[in-house]
Amino acid sequence: IVDQATDPWGIDVTAIELQDIELPENMKRTMAKQAEAEREKRATIIKATGEVIASKNLQKAAKTLHKIEGALHLRTLHSLNDMSSDQSNTIVFVTPLEVLRALEEVD
Image (tube, rainbow, N blue to C red; front, side):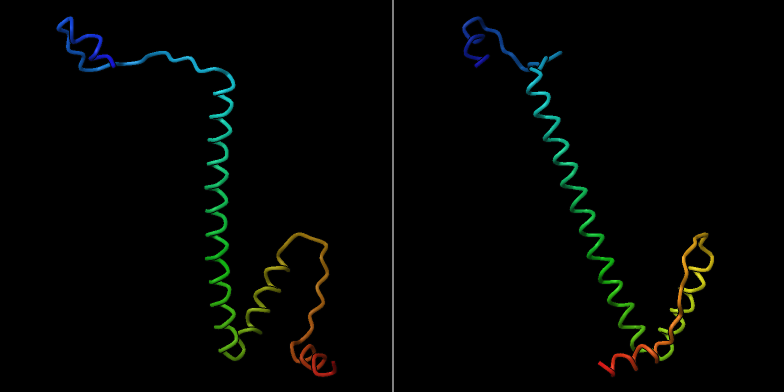
């Protein structure tokens, strides 16, 4: 478009630079909403990806604990140790797994 206007005068325009463009307020709000939606979309994708990775790791850990005899007992003891170091008023009743398994058979 610019060349059509300047060619008859023998002028060759090689570059056009725009400065200080003022957008209408509604356009600014629309662009801000779009940018926020994009950020939320990326955050949701990252969170979902992390949850998938975490679930796969939990699945691997469960399989490992199931394969190795005594591993679940050891994990339970570690968990009890971690809970005992917390500063809380939580009361934990420790029940051996054998008792729980016996209760399952009663049902």
